Length: 263
Image (cartoon, rainbow, N blue to C red; front, side, top):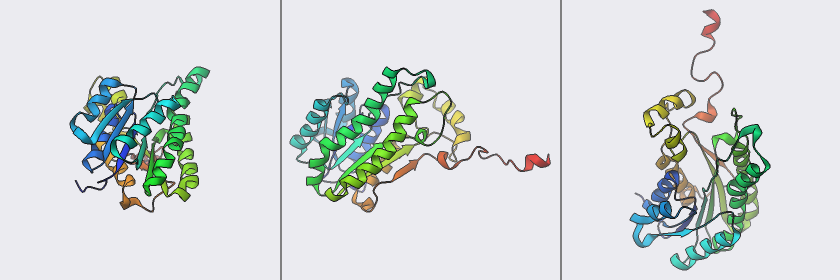
């Protein structure tokens, strides 16, 4: 690795998931010390197991301001600073148009509100860093309508706008804020739905992605590491499509449509 993040400390919410662990590993591989904040104690411990003194896990409910405060303070006390915040914690509690008020509130609380609160709690430390970075995990779902999905896409669309707002208001503190919108990416939810069948998952995803497959979480992690580094020092307020071309593909997909008129 190139050591893009040597000397920096990152806090990753939701870092205990399959997706989150890959992001944590990429940040650490680039030299960052990483604190994982997650409600999953077993997964969180696993995420930092191989990082030794450069990793730490703290049980964190991102819907609790005091838990977020404790996670931020732990990162600073253990590693000496906080330079990077990755808001990755996520809920998929979505029943489409039938979603209850509780589902709306709980999902927005985890996905959107927690990212806003975490950014504000981390802000003084990111400012002190002199090169603070926030990266919000959004989704291709933020940009398009998807059958039977309402709450999750709305929460992710909100995160794209939150990113712009944070980028503007935090700019005087020299804090850059960007978001990353993955396409279909191998994750716990896809592992569960496909019963662990990656080949099937790639096959289903192929028509919607130029790359003909789902992404690997490590691939998304590499983009996050880049955005967190000084290599991206002029990048802020942007939403990065890390989606294998999903968001560029129109409804005709990659099948020639015009020739069908001549058939």
